[in-house]
Image (cartoon, rainbow, N blue to C red; front, side, top):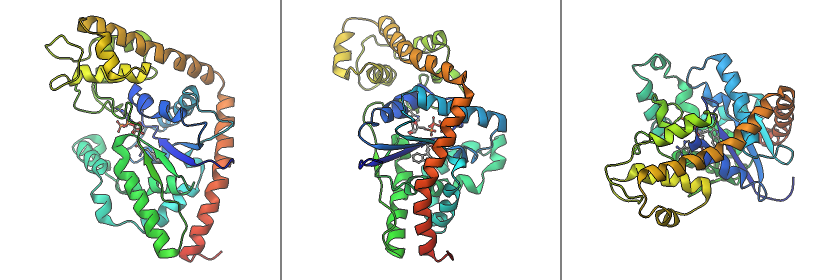
Length: 335
Ligand code: ATP
Ligand code: LTN
């Protein structure tokens, strides 16, 4: 690989991706490809921290792989792989788990949120140890590749801080082994909010399908969802208190078109919400169309997708094994 810095990121195949995942993650990552060596991972091992239907997990994993490619990730130049096909993730994760404190994991807001959300539901019977130790596996994902930068949405910052703490802790205890990764949180579209409740994040696991736009939603469905988005009783396309719904649509429009918020306010001066929503809906449709076309093409050629993930796993294993060997030696495992 060329002497560029390395970035690593991952998405869980735990459901269909939203436009929030795309604008907050995939799209920004695709833009980093010229500058960095990239490793992108379909985090299927993270996904089983919540019980999955096996056939759906398989479908979601392949869909996600195809969407990475449809979003513009160049699989010739970079490494795109499926986590469970690179056993070093599970292997390093165990060593890191043995260096992670219970207190650190207990403070993770995602664990607190998810265990609360699932208690009382069917999934509540499965608040498992994996959901708790999830951040140690995520740290393994990152540290195996000696990543310099980890692009994630703002919601993952706490997990990344733990990965940094673990790297430093291990280096201090056993001598320099891991690079200490930096978070890379894009300012644009770092948080796309629910279309029905602009105070909560747009999330693919929301019960209300009108709250999110899926990357693979039929175009007319996506358009309808924008038009049904909550705004406020005013009429001005502006940011400000009480205008969170409008601001969220402005944010989506900005991420899709590249226009900044001031330009958007000017563009819609004197126009009502009807016009505004129509334009945003159109821009969303323009954003989704090429991705869906590419995705549909890729899904017609499953052999190609299989070649991509097989080659990806091989390349990833090569890098990951170097780090794992060092770690195993340092902790005292016989060679
Ligand atoms: P869930 O809602 O089921 O917890 P999710 O939609 O948050 O899942 P993840 O797999 O956790 O999806 O996230 C994948 C990537 O997309 C992460 O980098 C995350 O920060 C980013 N992301 C997720 N939702 C949004 C959002 N609403 N706006 C911007 N970025 C997002
Ligand atoms: N936990 C992340 C997904 C994830 C990840 C990673 C992100 C798993 N491993 C490594 C960055 C680096 C999420 O839920 N968004």
